[in-house]
Amino acid sequence: MSTAAQLPDHVETPTESRSLRRMQFGWYVNDWANAAFSATVLTVFLGPYLTSVAKNAADAAGDVHPLGLSIRAGSFFPYTVSVSVLVSVAVMLLTGTVADRTGRHKELMCGFAYVGATATMGMFFLGGDRYLLGGALLVVANIAYAVSVALSYAYLPRLATPDQRDAVSSKGWAYGYAGGGLLLIANLALFEGHDALGLASGTAVRICLASAGLWWALFTIVPMLRLPSRAGAAPDPAAADRQTGGSLRELARTLRGMRRYPLTLLYLAAFLCYNDGIQTVVSQASLYGSEELGMDQTSLVAAVLLVQIVAIGGALLLGRIAGRYGAKRTVLGSLVAWVFTLALGYVMPAHKPIWFFALACMIGLVLGGSQALSRSLFSHLIPAGKEAEYFSFYKISDRGTSWMGPLVFGLAYQLTGSYRSAIISLLVFFVIGFAVLLKVPLRRAVEAVGNPVPERL
Image 1: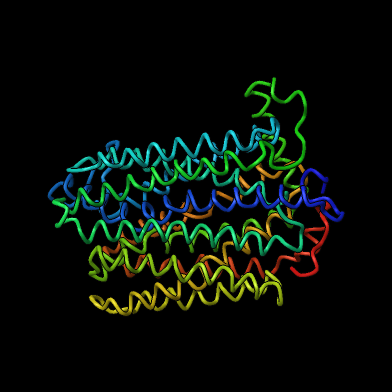
Image 2: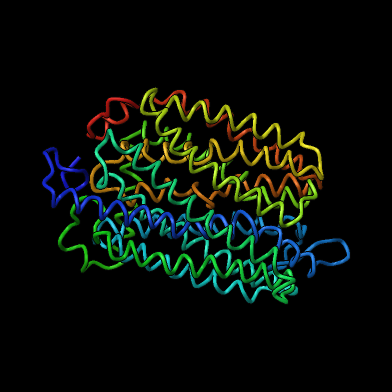
């Protein structure tokens, strides 16, 4: 890897060390900022609330008709998530090529962050039977979120040496869960006290949704000030003057060029599969809890807050385990834990909050670590100068941006009318992802792209 894409192999001067810590802090705070959208909007409040809004607009058969299609009101939220991610794929890939060619990673990252934050603040106006408005805002916000986060991931090779990436990536996820959890505490207090404040419960939910956008916008100022414009290798000097058509041609070349690294593609296939299952569990947990298990909004928020808190320690713990046993073994072990977690969710009795909280603890323990280590592993498998482009493919399935899982979840509910059938249908993602990851020879994959091989993988 070029020296622009990784830390220089020499003893750092105090100035270099301070500069690196400054960049790392800005990168950590970026996770702190955008995790509020993932936690407050996608994971807790929007699923149940948008479903209730869709039910207000449903006909006598319980169906809504967006764009002339007849779908169950209870499937509208997962279907909308899937649509947003499918659209974001093209936007991420094109933006990734533009960022790598021009070196304007930070400008694009923060620009999309503010688009997403604005759309999220607009959710304050979601009420009554305005399910189409809610769907449109979700699509815009989730696309912007996906693109912004994909561009932020491109900084990882520059922020840590190969042997340090597991730790740096895990710390970033810990910051994210801490930030998302802190805002959830405030939102839980607001929701619990809405009567004393003279607010209807729906109004309180809309304030909570908008608060995530405000949080995202305010804290994005820190990475704007701390991160350099370019994330990886130096761009072509003429790139800034090229038109979008050139970026499209470069994207086509990237897609063709990825075939030269089949082991990277094999790892990516494994990740896209198992992480789609993880993200669907996370994004649909509140919907499952409210509709199938009879949990009230307070229990849902408390459970997700518990996930956020446990995930901070879980991310750091799995990072330490990976330092001893290797990231691949640790991720494989976490996938086994996910299978047991899913099975518990399927057999869990309704109206028993204590079991729902136990499930939250299990999710939190493996959630952050499995994702942080997957991110650091992938950073070793990217050719120098292609960080944003490759992480755009990676981001097709990441925090809050899965599409296969919500589609399967929504179809299972559409066909059976049971959220238990929908949740157990996700097992296939973990089983296939585990089997494919097991087959990936990571050391050979790192060598194939010309990167230094870390001591443990």
